[in-house]
Every structure is written in structure tokens, then in C-alpha cells.
Image (cartoon, rainbow, N blue to C red):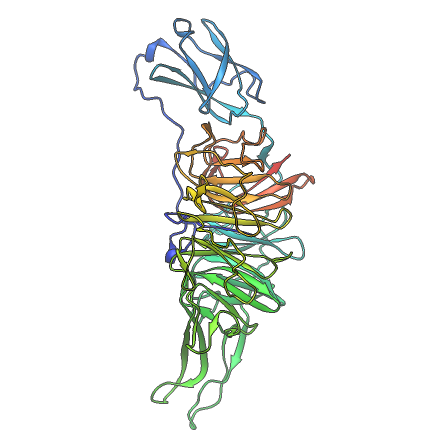
Length: 538
């Protein structure tokens, strides 16, 4: 139910592309070269604090010398959060872990001089799941994960290796894994896709895959960013009798059986009553005729047909364009769509079932003014009951999600106002698209939120490249309550670097509640994440 794109960097392909970049992060270095330590303060950064980890409120002892002359001036921090100092001696310092401290490096400041100490692990309610057997992750972004009917997972994205199983033979953008993440070698995807796969959905007796590719497995052509595969991973093909001159023998050639695609990136697919709704940054629908001769009628040829239809289109089960949805038969074209990048969320159940939320960086949609967010009715036309008279967001929306339990939307991005009211880069919307003023976001520093999702129990996860939230160090990942405040006990994780495609609620091997987090993720809790992790959440 969610889709996220970072307009400036993470999603850069074809205007609304793929998670492709990540920030290289290193531990902060003390700003002093070899020689005399600053102010005579000495701390061994490799030492283990006593205790080595603990909850907020825990008193921690760190060995250090040279502190006594500065005992009234020094400030101690846990990963940027100021702590209470309870004792300073010639040999050590004792401090209390503050309420919203997070895992990371400790430091002592005296004026503008900073001396770094050892790492300290703050115990929290989100922790790596040791039963998830994907220690090496992937070598490229993971863009979509779905569960199969037999409790395995299908993983797609921009990778060519999964957990070091593609070293000899590349695993090109699609892999299957067991529930614990272990690679399932039985998937017969052959050479996989020759470009990124952004989405995969169950469709009939197989799957549809979409993204930015022109070939899959043995089919190196005749695919336009969308095709159908069998349950075992092989491409679904059909036999065609091509054109033959009278002096030529009849033959059969094989082509992809799903005869439909688009000229640009396809980011999301949704199954709708035996049809498929596709959204992305495309401009033309493309189909092929395989039984036609070339111009001189000397040999068979593949003829491409195209129809202009932008960003959103619905196809029939065979891949043909459904002209009952967002199509103007008088002009022979699709409706205008947005004048900028657009992403989507489909209502799959409830009172809004069949409606499509569209958000991104557009100021007009279908010829009408739009503040970067609109909703379409089930027939594809604008829903005038959504945010009637409202101006929407004043800057791009990078992520949106709908919670069918609460009937609320959550959005994140670069905006500062929504409908003319203050909304600091996050907002909760009522089902009619108006602002829910009970959710009060706080100020971000050091970057912006790029992903937002509300879990089934109401907790809200936000990720991005920000460093603080409401003046508290959060380093790119945080958990909020339904009022927009940091949730105590759930914000102890350390440095996060990268972008999240989505989060899937699941369970660990021991039955504990868990979250599958994937995207283009370099670090989680200060440790390599390799794009694909599972954490437990209490």
C-alpha cells in the first residue's frame, strides 16, 4: 500500500526511476592529527563501556583521564544526545543514558573541542533478526518483495547478486527465497531481466513483472518494460505463424504472450478484476503485430503500434489496452495526467475500493490545477470529493500511504504547507484529503523525510537523509506515534543511510513480530544492510 521515490536522487531513472544511489558513511573522526591529545583528555575509543549496552536511564562508566579540570564545563553525548554526568574522576566518567539516545559513538565536548569515545549500544525495541539468513543482501536496490502461496518470497529490483549466490552466474533482478531469506535455486528465470524490475504481482497462474527492461531470460527483444512469467520463473510465450511468401515453408516463431507494454519506466502494477493497472513515467502504450511482412513483403517483420497514454493505463489480460479507462475515443489518446512526476497508491478494499491516489511533483492533472496530490475514481476520472477547494502541498510529495483501518493518509516530502496550513514535511490527511491537525510534525534538520508508513498497530515509520527531528538525533530513521511525536523505546537504532522502497510486516522464525525492510539501504543501526534486512519489533 505504499510507494516511495526520492525525486532528487534515489529515484532518478526516466524522471521517476529507481533507487540507485546511497550515501557513503564513515564514523566521525576526531579533528586532530597524531601528537598531543586535545586539552590533555585521553579516551581509548576501542574500550568497552561498562555496561556495553543498556536502556535509557542506565548509568554507564567510560575510562578516561584528564577530565577533572573540565568537570564543570564538559558535555557528554550519546550519538549526539546530551547526557547527565553523575561522576568525574581522574580515571573515569559516569553518565546516564538519556531518554532518546541511540546507538552510536560517544563524545565529550569542552567548548568547541570534541573528543570522541567508544561506541555504545542503546537497547531498544527494534533489533536485527538473527534468524534472517541474508547476511550479504544484494548488490543493488531491492524494489519489491511479495510472498508466494507457499510462504516463499519473490524479490525483484536492480541487483545481479543475492546473498553471494550470483558470483558465478548472475541473478539478474529476480530471486526467490524461503521465509528465512535463504536463496531458493529452483526459480528458472534464466538470464533474468536485462534492466531493473520495479514491481511484481500475482496475475492468473503466474506473475506480471514491470520496470525498465527490454528482455527477459531467452527473450532478448519484443518486451517493453512489462511481461508475464510462469510460476516457475520462465517467461510466458506464444507460438505465431509469421508471414511467409508462397515459396516459403510455414513455420512457428515464439514471442512473449503478454502483448502490451510502455515506452518508459513502469513503477507499479495493480490487479483489477482480471485486468492490470500500470503506472509510471511512460507516455505511450506499445503493442506488436507478429504476422506482418516487411515493406517489400520479402520476409516477416514485427510491427510496433503505439497509443499515447501518459503515466496511468489499464490493460486487459492479454496485454491489449483497456480503452474504457482513462481513454478519449474522440482523440484516440489517453487523458492528460500530471505535468510532473507521479506515483500511486491503489485502494484495494474499503469504501474507497478501486480509487487511485496519485502524488508527486505536478501542479496540474488532467488539465486542472492540482497541488501535487489527487485521487481518481474507479473509472479513472478525477474524484472531486478529495480535498475539494484545497491547494494541496506547496512542494513535492515523495511518499504516501493509506491506512484502511484508520481511514487516514500519510505523506512525506519537501513541502512545508498543505492547503495553506503549516505541515513540516510530514502530514496526516483525512479520507477526504483534508489535513488532520491532530498530527503535528516537528522540525527536521540535516535533510528530509523520503519514506513514510503506518504499521497495523498505528506506529509510524519515517526514513530519509535527515539527522535530527525536533532537535533529537535520529540519523535517518525514526518511529512516531499518531500525534507525530517520537515513540519512546523505538528510537534507539543508530545510523541509517539509504532509501527504503517498502516495509513488510511479517514474523521471525520464533514467531516474534518482525519487519522486512528493503530498498537501497547501505547502513541500518550503523551496520551494513546491503539493501535487504529483517528486524524484530516489540
